Length: 112
Length: 106
Image 1: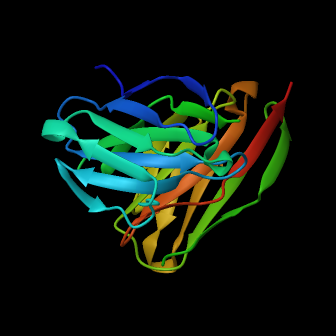
Image 2: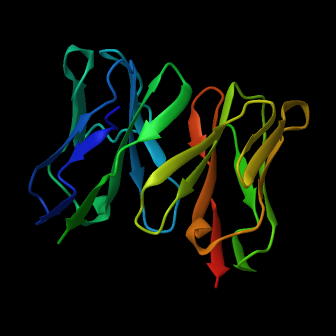
């Protein structure tokens, strides 16, 4: 089966610019996660979707971050405006309920 | 919220050696998984193991949920085992541990 697909793989933007990341989960996986991983640290959950509903977005900085999951399949994560501290790897994962989730390759964001 | 600790933080092994990585968590959990993040950043799911013992080749894992810890065993380590090993738990929310960085030397 195809894995979790993320794009782009790399993105370099200037601060204050907007940026968007896209994720296509494994077919049939109703749960989708966005994580942020800073250098040398473990991933930190930003938002979790059950189908189309965001069920846990407590760690999402809502002043500049937004996310959506259209028709319970693909998802986009947006940052506007980006700050220097947003430089990190943004990871998407999906699972069938909470059992055994699979990660995509991530998007490495550099804000300059 | 729930706290996750992993030990040791760093581990250097000679190829062929065995190792045990530990994950402690502060509350009961519904889900515990072990991941390997390779040097290219890809996170690979090793085990889904909320309780009991599982084995997959040279790797095995044991979770004792009542005592709130899980162990990952790596036998006959290879250089391709290098990377960071994370345990992640799901209680009220999803939490990753800080990881154990493993380096296997040829």
